[in-house]
Amino acid sequence: MAHPSKELTLVVFKPDAVQRGIIGEITARFERAGLKIVGAKMLQPSADHYYHHYETIGKLISRRGQKAFDSIANFMQSGPVIALVLEGVEAVGLVRKLTGATEPKAALPGTIRGDYAHTSFAHADKFDVGVPNLIHASSDPEEAKAEIAHWFSESEIFDYETAHDKFTQPLK
Ligand code: ADP
Image 1 (tube, helix red, strand yellow):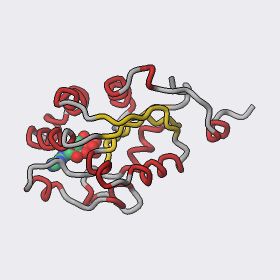
Image 2 (image 1 turned 135 degrees about the vertical axis):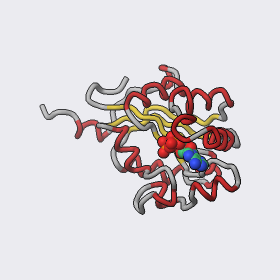
Image 3 (image 1 turned 120 degrees about the vertical axis):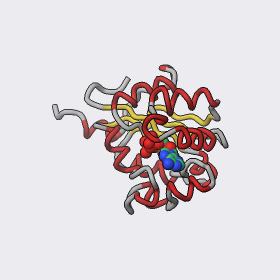
Image 4 (image 1 turned 60 degrees about the vertical axis):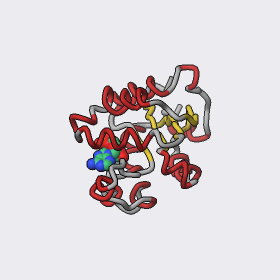
């Protein structure tokens, strides 16, 4: 379990990030910010798993439509992904900030999507593929809880002390 003053959040490296070989570079950005990796694994989930992730939890069909759901669900199943659970102070919002806007075209320089991707929804839609924007990151603490429970069992989440922990505890 996370320290009571800290949050857990889910990051999933999408097939484009895995196939481009930039997992290390992107993970380094999270580590550099002091976020702690408390869970990590590679997997290639089923259509059902992604339905639960994007629709049951993420309500993607009502937010963005059936076509967007179908294209991202297909894209995610096209290859293995790497899932991480990160822990830190207000980690959910921090990871979204580091990740940047959903559409790479709109993502600011300095963010992961802004620095490592550039395509648009319009371009992705022409080819009926989910926009390749490298990572999924939980959008709020409630969604993070549901997503982590969906992707990880309790025994796959680890509790250990890092050097950063020392500096984010209340001073004695
Ligand atoms: P986020 O991943 O930033 O939380 P959403 O949950 O709204 O964004 O969308 C989930 C994923 O679906 C996006 O990351 C993106 O890869 C894909 N997606 C969303 N809308 C579209 C679209 N109009 N065309 C192509 N792909 C889309």
